[in-house]
Image (cartoon, rainbow, N blue to C red; front, side, top):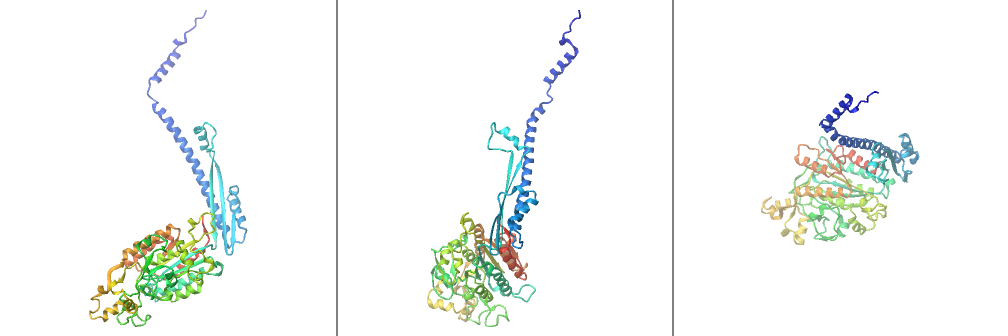
Length: 521
């Protein structure tokens, strides 16, 4: 009989046992055990990244198609059915199943608005497996699909638009545009008139209102607005009021505050004198006592024209503009913002009935962000701010020389330079006797007030176009002024620096942007 061999004594068994024992004692492979969970985590995150990249690519494609479709459909120059245009864009992009409902098309005279919603559900490759890892039972947190949503609204034409046109009439506007024989003021008249005539056309009737705010060293609000405010009135020669520092931190206007009337004076020693304006520049004005450079503008064409669509009234005033006195951009900006702010609505409502068209009752309307989603109020608000310089200082008379009717009358008819030349003390010797030589507004204050007003306006959704007409790079003040204007503009695309030669094109460009085809979402 054949004897059976014990397997445990076989050479193969012994070799196997020896190898297993060696493997158990060996430290090789410990790193592999640590690496396994790290490898799993890397695979999970890598898979998630792939799904998210696919999702973002589809989302960007869907949004691009939605935007292009709405812009094309809203274009008034194309005669096809707007809804069909949108459908065609989605079909040709391979996204015909991604339209989330039919396009919403709203049309009016010379106006079309198109709204489109898109949705794309992406099946995930890796994230779907997270359900099994994170949730033991079926959950609403389903990672099997990711949904990309795109909404877009485009409009061409004009809805409700409120514009404040804030224009610099300071003395430096008398200078020639560099390299030309055209004065800055002449170029402004032409460009501003064309701007008005572009916006106030019959097809935009009752939709666009323009408030004209001329400014120099101050802003003349005119007798109608002046009479509706609480003012410590001292004279009837002009209609400017002094605003406290707090006024320049907000677009709103306090109708409960009592304001001081601005002195009707001329502290500027330079004017046109008794010679022709066209023949000479500024000269020291000691020969003529009249106020041709008053702190408060006093001519009727220098007054604010609020919330108007009367092209003739606006352009007639602009064509009469003359350069005079200093520059207070911040005051022009404040009044421009005030005429867009709903806090001034009750004051506007009190004006004579022939000043404001019936179509604009209720303006300034609420800001779009504050009107509510269901409100029909959707006014777009713009400030077009133009200057050829920078904020300058301003002075007032000492109270001791401006505190009775005879003194007020005297300074309304005699500028300071002429009065000092005629006095026994001689010119300039006793200037601070008459004049409060502590500046009423410093240049630095003007810059600060201007920038706080710019911020307040932009925070309310007001779009600010800023035009700096000074083109002299050798003038540090002019360069500083351009810098401040650039900071004030809503974006770099809303800022225009020019010597003045391109002013017509700049105003035309702004008018086109206000009424042009645009995406609103």
